[in-house]
Image: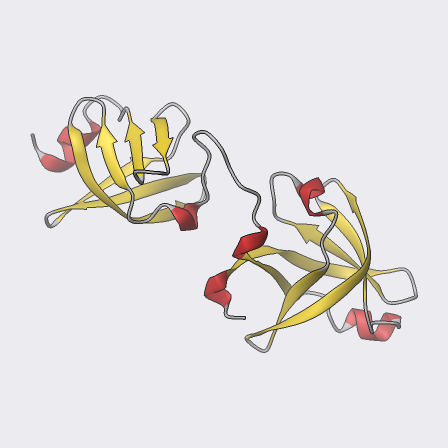
Length: 175
């Protein structure tokens, strides 16, 4: 499986116990949704390698996992620090105005005041703030991804409706 068909799920933190269990940190809003997980993909030397789960317990954003064929603390310690990925199909379906950043490039951005702004090029993730990057001709428009800004996400028409902060669109487009 290729990395572009997957999402980052977390990281192996350390061993847990003496029988080959590992402790992982889960990077998800609702870790409990992954309690029925059957396998994980570990990135080893830039390849995603599947490991089957025989037992999993989730506590907050941490999980204690027993992997098939990892039966010693030595073998488990070799996995410490590795990134964990899952196939995109394992992402829970989102409703309403919630979305995953990877699913919205190509969506149209429509502002309440200015109408159609353009097509979403990509989501830029900066510390503390994610932004929609919309190219209008040769001009770049950056729109903060905030609940107060996004008024509706229409997956059928691939459109995100926004109410941009006052003057933001004019600042970029000089309207």
